[in-house]
Picture (spheres, helix red, strand yellow):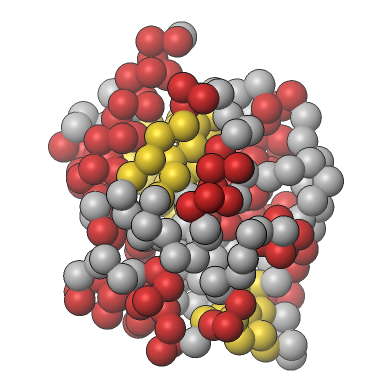
Length: 241
């Protein structure tokens, strides 16, 4: 059995993992999800949310060897957590996520992509220092292969995304880069181009790069297949120790 900590992406919260947690339990694993500061039920004021506060929240949630999974934007927080304290992190898993490049912000990486599918849907609130997505476009961007129940849940639960963490440079060292790292690329992703994910997946060993035929939200579209993929990663991690 392995321990998993599941970290959500932009505008999401722990709620997005509600199908994956029982699927992992059925495979014999223990899984938890947390709300990052300013997300979900966490009421941290937006102007106090930083990449460091994300990292600290992840580190605080860890007390034993754990596979930490980051979706989308969470590639940066999980890596920042590993840079802060890798003691309890047994592996990092990037799920259609931004795998950080040293010296670049997440925003830099997004803007460096081959095209910008999210740009027409982004709505910035300069007063709050946040952005969100046009509700009329979210299903097509994030949930086009998900059922109506999942789409409704997202509509009800999506929250503004603080901008500051995504415009903070992360410097990589061996604290994070020496950990086992895996990348799961979603080949039907309409938010982060799959070809760009393939480039980012080049930062992990080739044997640790796998794909799912899913949208940007495999936790809704194919939770059992995602859990099985994480199960395989857990088996690989245990064999390596």
